[in-house]
Length: 447
Ligand SMILES: [Fe+2]
Image (cartoon, rainbow, N blue to C red):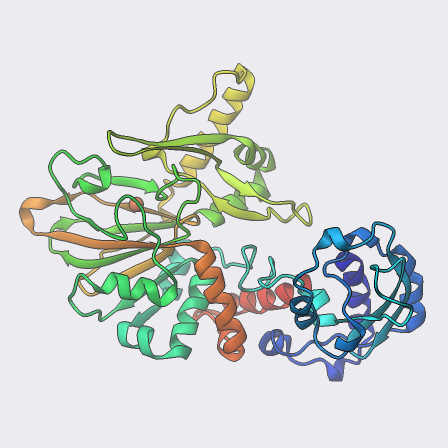
């Protein structure tokens, strides 16, 4: 039903007088440019509405005038099983920005006068967090490399992050777009990483603790707790729900070395999708096993390298996550795979790994005490250069926040401060601004 309605939404927009269309860039969250379409057109579409794809139960006649979400709440006791299989629209009428439907074979208890009334906004955005909205899982992002990130890196002071809602919103918008932001001027306290994390959402607890420390220890069970070079990886891929976002607050970093490296794996995946779709396909199908196998904790899960949904077009990779963490990789391939498949998988993995060695992609910096990096764990690969423990001290405090919590934060901030969220532009040369403009337009039209 929603897909079908999308078709006449698009035609309605095309027919709308341009003078009535607001600036989509600034207003896409608060003003809907949809204009009424002729009832005759609706009548032609009406019989095609599939009755079993109803998104919500029909409202009580007495609730007409209440928005669709309100209606859903009032019908909280009715689930899809209460909707008769044979129900279908007998009339569909557009009344301003609401759609009115009368039903044949209606829900028992409703008579001929029963009218379902849905706001077009609800039908356009039936999910509380639209998948393709600017706060959704499939939100538009800006692919970046070293040169771009050197220009657009976003820093926010701890005091602004904690106390200035608009500046915090801008930081979250930047995080949603690039997957990487930095907090500075943080008080020198081990407690700060928890405060920074909980500003975004509940801390994700793991067997490492709700927060944890990264410093070299004797006989470390995890390479992160040594002083060795730590290659590009994502954290906790051996879990069923790897954390969506990670924080690393620098408390000490006086050793030689120990620089942090970041790389946008979505940019790599998009380029592979464009130039070598056959490799993208291999990496979407090839599931790698990740394991943590020690005396007290044993975890094992398998993920495709490129976790992709159903694309809208050949150009759209519909990337949801990248899953890649060689330091924790288990047995690479199940034994029942044939040689040809295994060989293709390995070739594709080699190609992907080779892309991660390209220094033009790698953004590097050495965190100073009082600075914290926040990054999207299943997008931004992170690594660390070797450091010399005889030359000083290195101590980072870490925490995780789940992806759901950040999507919730993105959604609530975009609704509460639409001008800060949708008006946010990346600093940089004009072509970057153009990318943001395109992003907003496409988000609004596809959501
Ligand atoms: Fe890590």
